[in-house]
Length: 489
Picture 1 (tube, rainbow, N blue to C red):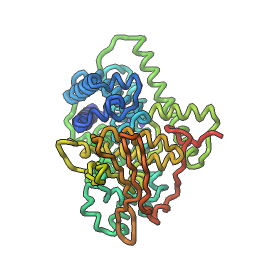
Picture 2: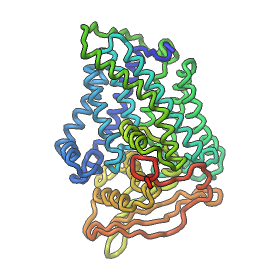
Picture 3: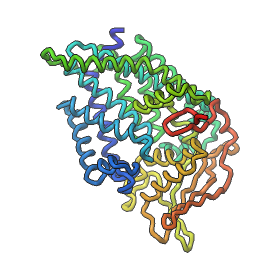
Picture 4: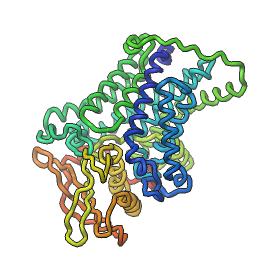
């Protein structure tokens, strides 16, 4: 167990530098679209129109936020002022990627944002205990909590894939041919959807997460589990466009590298001695409180996971007092069911058109992998598609709450430069399995008239596939956003 909780200073430096690279990469990639990702509705951005957001995400506030964030990541890269720098990264990550999950149509940038927040928290506690934990107890508890949490995240991701159709070849194959996500879609698109490569990758996806997650919980195998997970995300990076998500997960996997192990043996030896601190009652109390928090988090984690699964699969509410606590706790720390890259999100894509009112002539606005002076790098950023998904999966997750979908769609529409002589048309395209091959079927259109404040929905065709039902878990509407529980009666 002692080896399981140990982490060399060399590996810690690798994690810190890797995190700084991922964070800087995400921030620099987001700069051309910063006025949307880090802007409130008042300033034509994605976040809600709230007093605090209108201050932080105003034109001036946004510059200050991003400048401090970039500067902090740079300090981490050069190993200077790492405790305050990692704290700045953690606070902004917590606010933008977790707090805004339900207050912005960017949904906290989805999984790429969440994992950056998770890694920011890890780096902060590693750097804090490097200098301010003379006993080393808090460091051991932090490492234990983060290792268990990461392994559970991967186990949950694998479990949901197992239940959502991956074993029946109803998983990542449509993402691989989807223009939003598929990096090699031109190669895979001509293949039949029953091709062995799709079946192989689908089985590898859920089995890999389940096996690696289990191995990471078993001390003698934990480094092998971490390295296997890191290798699997290299394969994912080669196939799927996920921004810096793959890089972030790979860096996170180094947490499982033992002193003197496979990775540590390849790194230069770094000898870092914690500062000889004077006895300090406040520091002792703070460290004790943080250690207690990690213990409470670990004790509650299985109950929170089981509770959310009870809500989701059982479609039942827990006793109201516990349900309220569970929803508050899970939203506070971003504990979710990892419905990542399943057919809910990959079996469709949306195209945005500018349509002339008089002639009906359309111009495609949202073209993946295209740069233009009018759109900049907008549709080169994967989180732009996370934003699309957060809007249009509202129709799947909250079918009876049409005002929620309309609100999200109008907010996005306002960020597209549309003349008074034009209307916006969002075309839902299903990636349908028809016969042996993939077929794109435009099944619905949503015409948004910003001038008249009018939304018109037109049904075009049936884009569903017969194989869509090959899953053990059906989608059910929750009572409210941020919860998996049905509405109370």
